[in-house]
Length: 413
Ligand SMILES: [Zn+2]
Image (cartoon, rainbow, N blue to C red; front, top):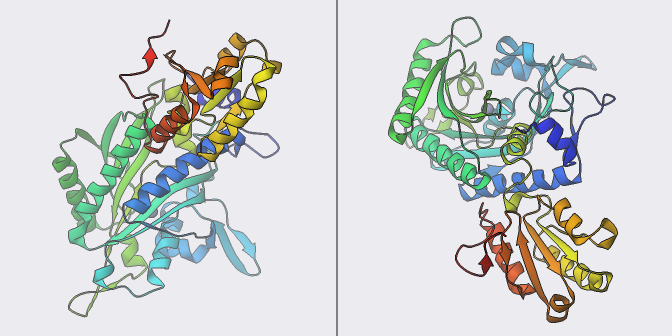
């Protein structure tokens, strides 16, 4: 059983300080390396799937959220507004209103649709129970968010495309979802009152889920205030479920912001907004990855990918040279020298690092490395350049395998 709060501190990924405040974690260098890698994976996947990225500010005028509906349906979760020269500004509770305004700022033809707008951006939640030391109940959130502005006919394809990106990301990250949930509105005034709109969007998502062949359950009272959603649920080691990824259909905000596109008929039409997140918030995703892998992350994600272990001080210059070659190839490497103890102790210390390169006199002289993999396998000494190229290829492919099967290694002893 892994607790991400304890492990995150032990692995020096992130921490909190009472002086900064509960629910406001900071990231240490190893955590930042992991986070950059995760964020770059998401941005690359989005670029390849036809998304364009934007940046928008984490503050907005109160009026923006009155229009979006957050003010009347979601204000319990929002920070109180700040008075600024007669104006009220708030820390944003979501990115959607900014993206709707960005869409509206230019005119759009039907030929531009589906228009996919993505941002890994900050948002804030006035979490009263912000827990010190954790990443799951935080007040400052970095969200992997995107909004697809499209026609009604394009919604199902876009939702399917998003589910496909989620499946691929989970494969690369080694995440197994607990279940899929169709999240529907429940009783009470939390949801915008528009029965026909709810019916249409629920029918669309149900169609996508049924066609996917994946099992799912419906749950009332779990929808966004503006529309139903497909939620991908993950479970922590104690079995507690939370939502990591989501795909939502929204007819409400396009209406509220009076969004339109010019159709083939030359007339104005209303687009639909599909909200989707592949990994959810960076905080929750990393908390889950830490707990799921116990710190033994897939190689491409590991804060340190290669640790180089010179047997004696004589191999130190060659070890440092090898580390520089790793860096030049885009790998994260470090040298663990004699000052950190015996070879055995250094190997134990680096047990979560996917690749351990032991460098003795023979290897240093022949520009070879003897690799030990994190799972205990040993690879026969081989030319350093070849070994690094192979690691580089596995990392570039976002593989969860540490080595290609079939050659060059002996079973763990
Ligand atoms: Zn949104």
